[in-house]
Length: 179
Image 1 (cartoon, one colour):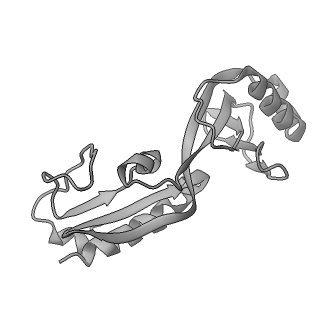
Image 2 (image 1 turned 90 degrees about the horizontal axis):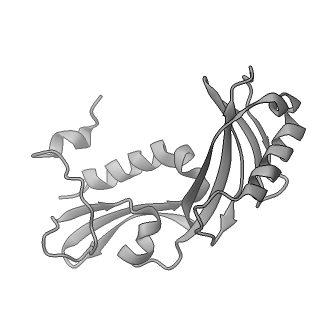
């Protein structure tokens, strides 16, 4: 289904790597979803990486999500999917190391197994480490940059997937208001 804003486009939006929001070759409207890149692109020094590490295990018949948030830096969650189970994890603010830390793997598996003993029999399939772009508040607004409108949408931290639909609607509304 197309929203009312989608009928306004003369052509398809262009997806591009942008290194300078004030570059002459950009059009009159730019949507900035640069994540961690916003630190340098905007520039926005409030954007910081939050390192997250998880372990993906084989599915052992789990159907229920479980979360223990008693420790902000070492969250414990078990997220069953069809073919595997994601167990995690970490939220290390200001850390940008993307290497798998074996000691962290041991802590994640120990916490997850304490929460769901059945995971003790699960084979580890792979490890994932990612950086979440965080800032004190999500930046979702239109900015006038000397005749160019830049719609910013970044800084969601670990809530990006949760907030994505609502933020996308807000970005579309801001774009729809563009003359």
